[in-house]
Amino acid sequence: MRTADLRSDTVTRPTEAMRQAMYQADVGDDVFGEDPTVNLLERRAAELVGKEAAVFVPSGTMGNQIAVAVHTSPGHEVICEEHSHVVMYEMGTLARFSGCLARAVPTSHGILDWPAISPRLRPASNHFRGTGLISLENTHNFAGGRVYPMETLRSIRAEALAAEVPVHMDGARVFHAAAALGVSLAEIAATADSLTFCLSKGLGAPVGSLLTGDRHFIEEARLMRKALGGGMRQAGVLAAAGLVALEQSPANIPAAHANAKFLAESLAKVPGISVDPAEVETNIVFFDISGTGLTNAEFTGSLREAGVLALGLAPGRIRIVTHQDVDRDDCERAVEVIAATCAGPAIHR
Ligand SMILES: *Cc1c(COP(=O)(O)O)cnc(C)c1O
Image (cartoon, rainbow, N blue to C red; front, side, top):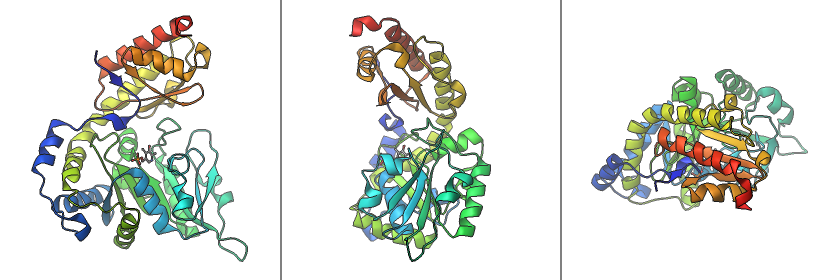
């Protein structure tokens, strides 16, 4: 039985082209700056997002936390959305490594705007350390892959510049944001001082993320990467797959978005499931199973038996994510399996 793994877009396997490139990669010691493939990947990434420089890091978490550490000093507040990855899923590193405090802002759909940010902004004074950074997540994972509208980003950028507060973008899935809006990565990246994106999510590479920014910022970021234990040696074998991912994988994103839309529209018709297809803008679909009477474990367990993997991320709240290793047939089968599970809850208790 073929498994449709919809838990995350991190589950993709490297393509044949990636494996070939990894095998043939020219390598050196990257801590000495001598890995030609890593250097090429960093140049290519910087070019793509229109920044001066980039540094290859093992994970998106490390990229984000290096950015926080470089932009801030201990005691600073970091304004971010309440369900953002930097505060929810990075092991408290904001506090542990940078000594920062999250000013987590509630929103209805994960997207901050200046009216939400400005009341939380605090200039340093005799009484408090003040705001050190604004961090934006684009697309927003926990909000279901929501995309920042360009006007919102530009307005935050302009106001933050005036307030002299740097902006970091957690763009783990920024390629998806660009595809959804039909804009270039550089247009999005221009609204932030620094940007992280993942090669290992929707782009299908096995490992790695890039942190991008101006030359001085990236020099500091390299030191922080070493401090966090992220200095890799012959990392060209990984960078080689990343270069293929940058070249070939963005073309697969529109299909992933269409499949997510298909899943949301189909699941909206299944009794017991609640989902608004209009809220699905990219490759992530959250749906509510409260109406089925099943627990998350019963629901995902039943799916698993039929070869469909989904993730329960909050009570009654299930996430599925499309990517280049699932096709329309997999999605159609997932809908059938979910409908069957919802139709026969009694047998699973
Ligand atoms: C996955 C993800 C990250 C980074 O995760 P790693 O597993 O550390 O690569 C960061 N931000 C968002 C929004 C993510 O979804």
